[in-house]
Image (tube, rainbow, N blue to C red):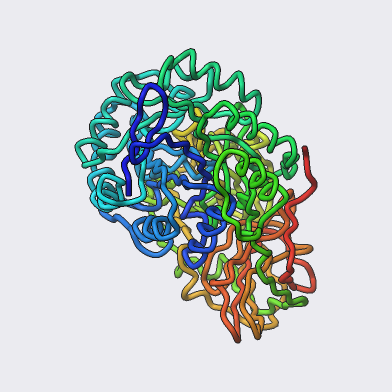
Length: 583
């Protein structure tokens, strides 16, 4: 493929003027069986490029393990993009934000209590160096200089919103060059952060979703010559638990896009197709109050969570056609969906009965954080023996992020970081009762100084002002549910419980799992972790990719942390429920 050039006048490709018309499409948020479909729909909307981040935390789940397989087969994704005739903007981090767990930074970095992320801290730099040494050899053949689709690579991500250490950005740029990345490098920042987050000698780009003329003017004032580009043109937004489903009027978004393209600028729609933060991978924000993000990353995008074109797809296609060739093929039709009602989950496995198969307890004087336990996602159970019967006040230094408190397996309270709760009073029934604190990681903070977000019980634990000694900390990552001992038609369990059932399907297609009457927990279909459910909303359905299903029997497991409905049923529906909207 031709090589991108940056001149004072703008981009050139194959020695011809070139405009990047791109859209965000994160391979790690889309089932790999659907990558080709989404890439084809990108081309049909008129895009000539797609953009993707690279999630360091998934590719390197621990220091000695690096993955490029399955849903993380980045080289395969890049090959499919090239086959579709699309260029690629690659954003490898190491920090990516993306409303993704920890902004893509691996949780094991936080096992070192003094580490400073996104800095020149030698401990952080050593890990970043190792990450790039593992990643870049797999990327090199996909660079446009080697005939591949990758036109340009981003240095860090919105660094100006976090710091102003030009030496750190320069170090990352040297790592990329040393790793063989010889295509153009660029930075991206919001207009007010351009001076702090850009790197002299490299292309600066801006991020915004409205007031486009002002955003581009700020970029031109900062960078008097060269291409104008909006790397994140926000055409929608993400949702948080307890909020509304955020949408943006397609006509208004299309007018803003028209304004950007009319200036001759290049653009990357954020997002073209948002997809899903499956499993435990959603991030969170903390601007004085912790706010976890939902699992759906629909983002009110031109392609919805199931990959179907929306009104925005057609509106954007019409705008793009004013400035660039658009394929003559019609707008793709929505894909087939399947439905099934009254799916009963009649088998139960109480979580506290199966602790031995879910994680091994670690003995310590004080509760250990998830990072100290070598754990990234899921839950951790802290247990200790209560010395006496009677009323007691339990105080926790900090809860990250949600603690359910039990005495002899009976629930006595819930403490939420989001509500700044740290204490609960209860009555101990007898001397020697067992205190259990089940803490859920609801998503590490992905933006701002809060990225140093360790999980579990932090600080001291006090019982009536005294710090008990002798704890067990049991990591429950729930990476595998093999070994759970399910029983049929048993009495209703008290406390967190896995519920299992099956549904027979004659055909396979996308669907949405609805959980009417269920409270909070997680869902797996055929072993694939869809993500979290929570009656708090706004999201009240979970997207099930067709490739996860199979003809015949399909297993559904729901972990319910509180109360399941009496009927113990779930439904597969043809449409999602992302909650009430907020324009």
